[in-house]
Length: 277
Image (cartoon, rainbow, N blue to C red; front, side, top):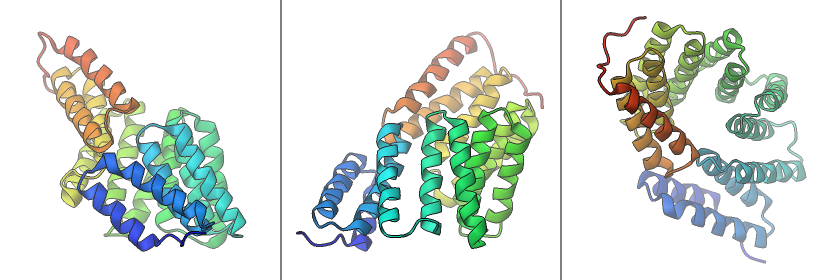
């Protein structure tokens, strides 16, 4: 039986690969470490690696593999007697996230409610609760419950504003709020919140955060909806480059390129004009 995974070393190496944008090495490194953890029957190692692997697969749009990884996390936590703990709630949040990616919004919302129940029992109203409110906001937005989606995003913002170290997460919350407002055709409010989200991402990471592309894409959607096709074309082009930079040519990248091609045709012979709020 092999030795246990040095999780500190694992995270350090992973951070280095992400920082250097060596995306082609990330998955092989994680799978190799997972195999080592499996050989040594290191449950904690399996849980740690699968948690990161699930995040990578979800971001790449490989949702079935993401579910597989996160289910291994939940199985591991159950075997370790950690059901009902904060870590278990986080695992549920991650599974809910994948269901959002798969457009299974009702399933995602049900899972998020289970996670919220655990956090409430633990009296946890911090970072994970905010992450959960963001997820629930996204699910509700897609279910057409846009008022409730905005309420959830604002709850996330209230928590994150008290955590100065969580600027990127605050930006995500403002992105969710802007997206929900755009669904209600409240374009002036949506534009204001999405622009603020972009400023936050730029201030905290110079636009290197992997969620930056989502905010860029969301603002391009607003330009598109308001008929400002030149601005939308620029936004979609930037979102496509960022998505390719962070994850390669994923399914999300394909969707952005379709939108870009569509507005390119519409932009012919048009200027963006002044937007109307």
